[in-house]
Image 1 (cartoon, rainbow, N blue to C red):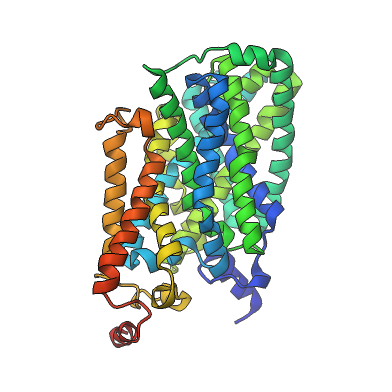
Image 2 (spheres, rainbow, N blue to C red):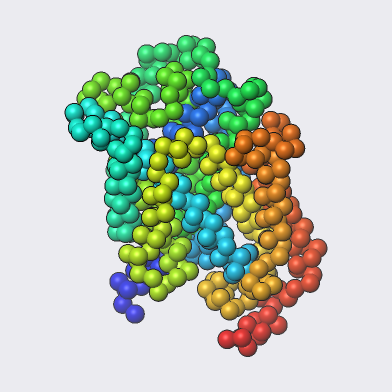
Length: 474
C-alpha cells in the first residue's frame, strides 16, 4: 500500500496512528482548543454566569466549573494518544460493540448543538457587520439574516474539515493568535473603562429565585462545558506527538486558558447586561476595532465548526468505512442546520445540562475502566477493537455493567436536575449540583458491577476461550 493511501486512511478514516504520522504538538493542541472553544462556548457560558452571579462568585465558578471536570477526565487524552485509535472505536473495549454504537449515535446527534451555537454566533456577527456597512435590511435582522449567515458558516467550516487535519492545524494556529489579540484588547478596554472595583460592585441582570440556585446553576453550566470535552479527546489526541502533548495541550487549552475568556465574558455580561458576545464587540470597540473584532470573531467560529465536524466525521467514517469522506462530512453537519435559530440560541444553559448528563456518565465509565479494570486479560486489544465479531461482545454486544452504570448515572442526574423545567425533583441540586456527582455515580457503579459481577460471570475478553469463540464465529 502506498504511503499517501495509508496517510489518507489515518487522517480520514480509521487506521491507528503511528509515531511518525502524528501531527500535533502541545502548541498545536493549545491553538486547536483556543479556536475550538473560546469564540463560542466559553464566551456564551461566561455570559450566562455573569448574568446570574456577581463577579466575586463568577471567577471561582468559571475556574472550578471548567478546570476541575477537565482535570478529572484529562486521563482520557492519554488513553487515546497511547493507542493512537479513534475514540469511539476504542470505546467498544469498554462498552461492547453494539452499546458503543448507541453512544456513537448520541455523540453525533448531541454534537449538532455545538455546531449550531458556533454557526449562529457567526450569524450574529455577520448581521451586525452588514448593519454597520448599510447592507440590505433583511440581512441585518436576526430572522432571517443570522440564520442565513449561520448556514453559510456551517458549510465553510465543513469545507475546512473536509480538507483534513493539516489544513486545520494551520487555520487554527492563525485563528488562535488573532483571537488572543482581540481578547486581550477587550479585556484591557473593559478593565480600563470600568475597573475591578466597579465590576465587583455590580449586580447580575438575571439572577435565579435564590442565591443557592443562582450559584448551583452557574456551576452546572460551567461543569457541563468542562465535562463536554470527554466526547472529543480521542479524535484529536490520536494525532498527538506524545502523551505529554496530548495531556497538557488539552488540560491547559480547554482549562485555564479558555477559562480566562469565560471570566472576561462574565465581567462583560455584568457590565453590559447582554448575553450575545457579538453585541459586546459593537458596544466596546470603535467602528474600526468593532469591524476587525467582528471579522476575527466570525472567523474563529468557522474554525470552531471545522474542529467539530472533522472529529465527528472520523468517528462516523470509522463505523461506516464505505461512505465517502465528502458524504461523511455532510452527514455530520446538516443536522445542525435545524438548530440554527434564536430559540435554540437562547437555551444554551439547558443544552449544557444535557451535555453534562451524557458526558458525566460516559467519562465516569471510561475512567473507571482505565484505572481499575484495564489490566491483563481485561486490557484493550487494538486488533479486537476493530473486529466487530471479536472478543468485545460481552452479552450480545453490550457490556451489562456499562449499560447499568449509564442508567444509574443518567437517572441520578435527572433526579437531581430536570433541565427543561430547571427544577430539582430530589431538592439536592442547589447544594450538590448534578454533573460531577453523576460522573462519580457512573465511575463507582461501573467499577462495582465489573468487579463483583461481570468479571466473575463472563470470560475475560482476551482469555483463550473467548478468543477461540470469536475465531469460530468468523
